[in-house]
Amino acid sequence: MRPSRILEESLVKLAERAMTEAQQQILQYILFTQASGEPRTYSWYVKTLSRDLNLPESTVKWSLNNLRNACLIESGTANRRGIPLRLTYPGALVAGRISKKDR
Image (cartoon, rainbow, N blue to C red; front, side, top):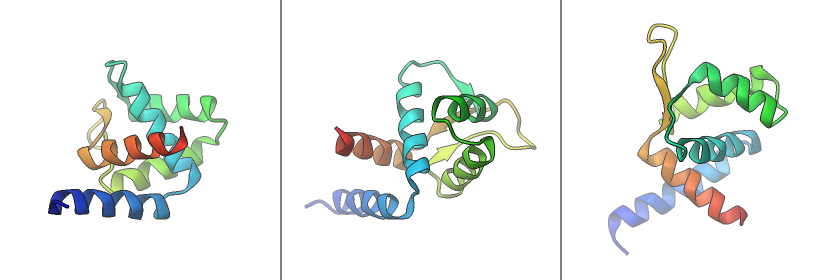
């Protein structure tokens, strides 16, 4: 097995063990939303995820912040507003593997 493949496998396994169910759902939601191609901001995701996944906004914010701290997503901050939220390469990798696992 290639070293990069081993790293990818390790990342996915660690992420699956460390992430909450809500964080996994949010990561998958972002993956499918990004497929539409229309960029969305952090605040849009907070409102939409809260409504669509029936989660409190505080839970969504906490989850998004943890995903950002884990370098699975990139987004604007209080100092850098209006920047679209997007999955990083590791985030897309993890989200894609989680969604395949759920099928």
